[in-house]
Amino acid sequence: MTIDYQLRYHDGLYQRLADAGWQVHLVSGKGPIGTRLGQHPGITVHELVMARNPSPLTDLRSLFQWVGVLRRIRPSALVVGTPKAGLLGSVAARLVRVQTRVYELHGLRLESAIGPLRRVLRSMERIACGASTDVIAVSPSLRERAIAEGIVPTRKIRVLGAGSPNGVDVARFAAARQDLEARAATRASLEISNDAAVVTFVGRLTADKGLEALTKAMMALDNINPAAHLLVVGAADDDTGAVSLDNLRATLRGVTFTGEVDDVAPYLGISDVFCLPSRREGLPTVILEAFAAGVPVVASSATGIVDLVKDGETGFLVPIDDGRALGHALARALTDEKATQAIVRRASDEVETHYAAATVQRRWQREFEAAVLS
Image 1 (cartoon, rainbow, N blue to C red):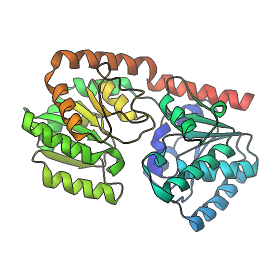
Image 2 (cartoon, rainbow, N blue to C red; image 1 turned 90 degrees about the horizontal axis):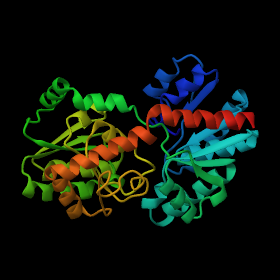
Image 3 (cartoon, one colour; image 1 turned 135 degrees about the vertical axis):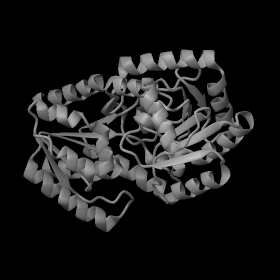
Image 4 (tube, helix red, strand yellow; image 1 turned 180 degrees about the horizontal axis):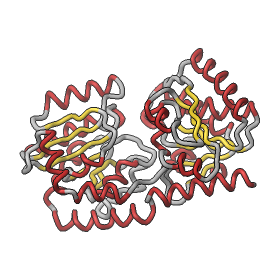
């Protein structure tokens, strides 16, 4: 992965493979997640700096470092994710002649990019896919979007099961919703009154997450339900996120910011509705976590989201960047108790059937075993 934070995508799978006898090597930027994972027997962490945005000189240095790491490890199989790690890792693996080279497609940054940056990102994705032996998309709609963009041929890209890189610990998130004492303590710590209806957003704070639409939606909701309170869980990821953060502070009366947190379960536990108005996704784990916690979901009809949220069935779906529609959907989720309860039940069944962590991790383990034994 490009940065340490992204190692969470397969947290649990690494340990599962190591416990099964694999020698697991993780390559990413330096950070606390890699440090923790490196303490598990059978897991070795290699720190390698990669610039997230296009940077020719830095990228060239990183490519040479990738080649050096792979020559030392001589892996049976390589799995790379994120655009930059996908590009550098897959090219280096091809140069070193790693037999199995899997590019795990988590999303397409180019979906929301314009101009020269969009062309650069498309070229990066094409190179990464071309240098890989297999491409695995984390959702069906992401697979279809990659094919439509001309990034990868149909025969080369697939989805494991229903998708998802890692699934979700269903029992843990369900317990967070059921622990009334912990919920009361969390509300008190955030100074959110017990009678407030909590609308929760979880994610990186950046324009791609639809924060402008979220601001407009909460303004519209305030006219319908003045007791609604917005809880924002996450930190600013770039300048657009910082601007959105300032706009939310200046515009809304009832809003609380937690910053980056290690565990989102307590915050979903106190939520009355979860909102994700993204412009693009791969397959958002946080929606699966909301499903598991029994929290109704209101989201945009973006790539990745549409695989999980079926309007009126497993959640409420609105057009991308439509703040007015988003506000009305939030109001319905908070007031139409009969419809919301039915939606929560169907969403809970969906996550338990297709996206439990053990189920998803077994799919990936079987994939690796088949690749090495073939």
